[in-house]
Amino acid sequence: MRTPRPSLVVTGQIVVMARPDGLETAEAIGIADGAVVTTGSARDLWEAAAPDARLIEAGPFAVVPGLHDFHLHLVGMARARRTVDLEDTRSMDEIVARVASAARTLPPGSWVLGDGWHTEVLKVAEFDRLESAVDGRPALLKSHDRHSAWSSSAAMARAGIADDATDPPGGRFERDARGRLNGLLRESAADLVARHAARIVGEPLDEALREVAQELSGQGITGVTDAGDPTDGNGNGPYAALGDSFSSLAAAERIFDGRLRATLNLPADAVAAAAERGMLTGQPLSDAAWMRVGWAKLYADGALGSRTAALFAPYTCGEGEQRGILRIGPDELDDLLRRSRRAGIGLAMHAIGDRAVSAVLDGLDRGPARADLPPDRVEHAQLVRAADRSRLAALGVTASVQPIHLPSDRQAAEDCWAGRLQDAYAFGSMAAAGALLAFGSDAPIESANPWLGIHAAVRRTALNEASGPWMPSEALTVQAALSAYTLGPARAAGRLDLGHLRPGARADLAVLDVDLATLLAADERLASTRSQVTLVDGREVRGA
Image (cartoon, rainbow, N blue to C red; front, side, top):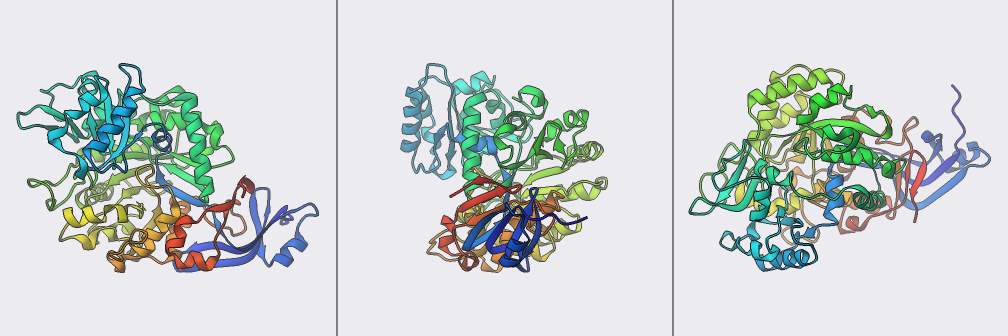
């Protein structure tokens, strides 16, 4: 078949493909019908272009394949813009003041919602201050890692939780010295209240999602995988049985159409509902060409910040001998694997602690073989023993990791995982063992800025961090980090036509505001990198 003449030519310092071992570059690419049709010199491609072809001259700036955030929470990002931001609070006084200020603007009985508090800021002896701050309203304040929540008594009452409540499977109610609930909820215990909380839906949610999509385009992101929900509750519309996030995003498809490719994970509870609809991981939604069915999300454990990540050895911080919470047992995991395999749905398994990672890999080792599906995924994989890093590759499991967590979690890891830090955030060792790395951000828990993630993976430190790199032997090259944001997610999703700009690829790209030398330096300048022009399927979704 004859190659079509380009209707669009892009010139500049073009990264055609970022491989872990190096960059493939070109002076120009030609685009027709939404796909890359040729690469080569600017002069040759312009001469071969159609008479009415357009030209984007990037000049000295770098052009990269569109980035894909392989793990974020789109609905969470949107709703976080409309709730009380507690991320930068450094004292109980600050938390209480912000919550009280928000409560005063709400009618009596309305929910007060907030996100972002850090464990070290809370003072259990002062938990009663929440009651006066919200003046009897139900309130649910989620932690930075979203694996714990601080709830008012009115909120727990609406969820039917009293002092004699027993801990739910995979969760824990914290109590005071007299055995009474103190409002602090861990893991699935927080889910019990969250399902009753007010949610931003409809046009207010759509408006916030538009803002999120624009922000992502401005950072050079052309594809995302929504991480999914812990339960199938609170869904709405045609996809209500697939949970809140899936159904909300499917309903908002027009917002992403032509702007952002979105893969939607579903809760593990919803595998049967997906099977009834004939959904398969990697396949488009029947009525939304820009959206695809993702993986079934399950939680094997909690998180470092809440000290609920499941560990083999006890935490070296806090009181008592804590080993975290393992949220799924082997029988339950084996059953889910059998059902998901029959349904054609892959698994995305949240596992942060070494015991949780080992448990899900054991399950995959025991379970039925994966059919013609994109690989299963381990989400986060923040503490992984050497033997299990090799098993990621042997079992063909994608390491879906978020390097931006590293600088945020550094101090907590040193305090709580002492004696095993050689297994923490071991990106270099995972790659050396042959595991496929696919990078994401976990936004809104961390910034969605992919360039901060690349900086963290390469420099192993926060911006302008005086203490220097943390375990620099685990650092990745810039080429490998960029590959994990482009080619890695494409391969993990079974999309050979994404993640690169070779002929045959969809024309998803970003014209950056830095040159290739600055990109490869990966220093502090990388943090402010933005896309001047972003193309999806060869169509401009963002211009300078």
